[in-house]
Amino acid sequence: MTNPLPAWSALQTHYEQIRNEKMRDWFAPANDPAPTRAERYTYTGGGLGADFSKNRINDATLKLLVQLAREAGVEKRRDAMFAGEVVNPTEGRAALHTALRATEPDAPFHAQIAAERAKMAKFADAVRSGAWTGYTGKRIRHVVNIGIGGSDLGPKMVVHALKHLETPEIHSHFVSNVDGADLWRVIEDIDPEETLAIIVSKTFTTLETMTNARSMRDWFVQHGCPESALAKHFVGVSANPAEVVKFGIAKENVFEMWDWVGGRYSLWSAVGLSIMIAIGPQQFDELLAGAHDMDKHFREAPLEKNLPVLLGMIGIWYRNFFGSQSYLVAPYSEALHYLPAYLQQLEMESNGKSARLDGQFVDYPTAAVTWGEPGTNGQHAFFQMLHQGPTIVPIDFIAVLTPEHPLGDHHPKLLANCFAQSEALMLGRTEEEARKVAGPDKPELVPHLVFPGNRPTTTLLVDALTARSLGALIALYEHKVLVQASVWNINPFDQWGVELGKILGKVVEADLTAASADVKPHDSSTAALIARARAALKR
Ligand code: F6P
Image 1 (cartoon, helix red, strand yellow):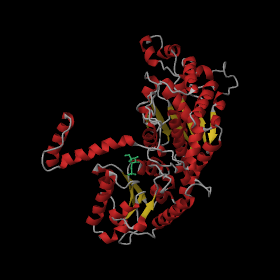
Image 2 (cartoon, protein in one colour; image 1 turned 45 degrees about the horizontal axis):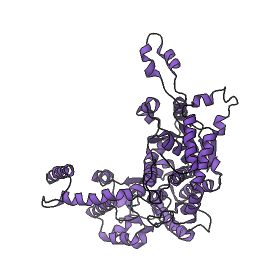
Image 3 (tube, protein in one colour; image 1 turned 180 degrees about the horizontal axis):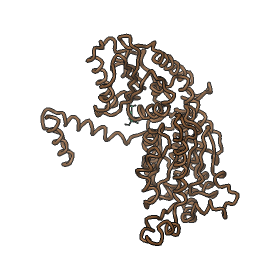
Image 4 (cartoon, protein in one colour; image 1 turned 60 degrees about the vertical axis):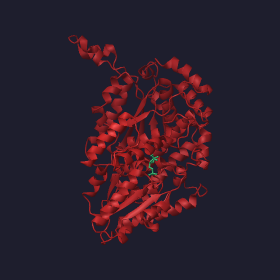
């Protein structure tokens, strides 16, 4: 695996030097008497803390990783993004999600963003207060966000995370899948007269969203809502307002986003309307403020102490030098249940690429498989593999120090498990220790009781799950993705890889629903699947 940057080859040499070193030795009093390791490798930024000390890093590693970030031009790319330069050249676009949370009046598109935000706030307040009613005069009690990918995952994740800040008057629902079961499970239980649908799609052409939007419209009409009153129940969010109006949504109910906001970076825009309705405009501002805190930290902190840079570069260390295939995000927080799913799109749609910016193909791995599940649930499912499987999976633990619920002794138990897991993964259990646990009668158990340890983890610390801290956490990961893209020399803001399946999907759909069996030529496997499904669909 090669990358021409000098720090890359220096890191390869360094890896050979430290790959067999044990973190438990680095932490041992003999080597760290003060002790200072935790302190030396814990950094703060944007109101968050990050303990990197249980990683396979020493001072030399960090120095080389930061050197690599510099050589890769991380600072230049970061500054170009904030300045609104075309950092997405394959689509000829800027990527200005940071402008959506900027407070500086000279930030790009400041006036335009403020105007749209004010329109959102007016609407959200009207829905929240009950001033906006359905066509029969009932207040809105159900908001159904219809969107997919970036038009779903961000708002869904945030609304779930901040449920403790949600107005009790309104229930938020998220429908994304073209599987009709997704929409059906929501609408079968709610009253159309009390329902508002927000159709969110940057392009307003996405198959899943448009199919769900049409079914939702039919549902309103079938339940007695006159076509002329649909405006009371439908709003649209898009960068393609003409298409929204064509769909039948009143012009004044269209909220705009812009082509310089990437789908997976869009929850800060009108795409976050469902968030604003759930938690209110003031808390939405807090979310933005948290992201802005992290933006400032990313721009101003030296790379050596810069959280997105360190998180990103340590990820590169495992992916490109240790060869790890996947990385796990384990929030010890039920509120952050949807964070891993959100990060899957952010990380893998952004950086799961092979073509470099110069048109050459990479010969080193890019985005790792991102996966995750809240703790402690994961411990009772897949942690076995993390502790004793032969592959190394780096982990980001996320611990929220103050609970957002009043229940007694749950929180110390939750935190204890989070911290204990990272300790166990780091320490492992030696053969000698295992022998003691097995006892003299069961020597055959010893190999099963050995834990290799030396498994790297980062622990992110959040004081309390507020709109502000959540904003900072999300922005941390957004910037981490940019840092890694810079080192891999790829464009994190396009997604050409989703196109081919969509094109073929249309062909297959036509073949599935065509009146005659005279379908287009396909490989024998696809043809047989189509034939089986055609027969089933006719039943
Ligand atoms: O197909 C992938 C994708 O384009 C994502 O990048 C995007 O977030 C999602 O589909 C939804 O797109 P839209 O907001 O245009 O409906």
